[in-house]
Length: 471
Image 1 (tube, rainbow, N blue to C red):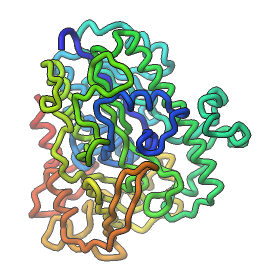
Image 2: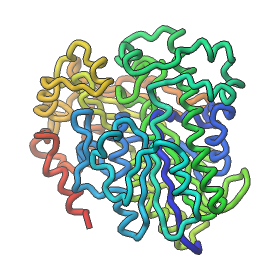
Image 3: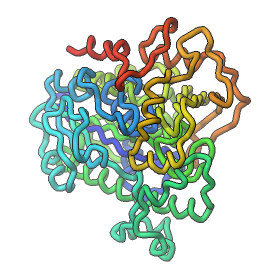
């Protein structure tokens, strides 16, 4: 393409796959998302590296699994300065880099996530963001816009009544609580807790209102980009760092993110729109995922895949064969979740199946879920976590057995359908080491030798690849 390129990455928190029209999303609730879905060159599911939002974003930033980049839980959420970030990759190619975020966990400090950004601003209002986006780019630019919606806390915002009214009756809207925060749902953060059906419906409705609020942010971004040059010079990617459970129950959880690695929490939408002015039809430079079984995309693949895609666009690639997307060849993808309530969880995702393994390293402290939802980690639990291998006593040795009750491993089938995600229970999987070997390979750990143990929040040998790759 001629002229400067603007790359815009928008990440939400708690945006589920069923927000897309192809999977049951309601156009009146998310008109801007649906508009983008119609125009995008690629629309489909992606697998987050964790359902814990900071860990997932760190993997998107670095291309590393959580164990390697070290953002693992609320007591350890700062990114290693040695890791090469997505923003640093763009900056090295001469891009102006700019970040706007309103993520609650990045409110007081950047936790190392600003690496590579020329500016790292709090998204107080959309007008200031518009001042940066509305002028046509003078040079190559990379923008990240991090939005904390539609995840908890939920708010019944009267300004959104008209937007959700066609789907949500007014009388039901006004009967909803004005606000539901973490404390109000902490009792159902535990996947084993039973969520009454009326409460589940109420929380789903509040999630839809939050979804409408998130869609307004997306609409404001699109409006400014269109005002600049009709999206002629913008490579736009929209996704979510994690999903959110909304009453699905075991094994997904009830109302939460970061409590499980089931599809509700780690399978998220991704939309890619290549530069160009066009109407309500897709540009066609990529094969859209709805036309055939789509290879799964890992969010962590964007760390290298998005700069590679930008380079191809800059070089003038427009045919499907010349566009380097999806980033990888559809190999199984790993998701990791650490500490939970005294257990670690790892999942391996294929296109229509996943393995889910939970490994307990300490008894669950009383009230652990309630405290964890507000970011508190018990010192005793943290000490036990740091002293234990990530997948149990036999981890990294020839004994890869998974023995109840300390360890459980299950196999499931999953598929994206018109109403979201459909699970099928497969026979219990015997632990043949498939998942453990994938963890070792993707975390850069030799398959033989002593099991890696977390010491003071990091394993030096695992972190060295990030340092060695820094240019």
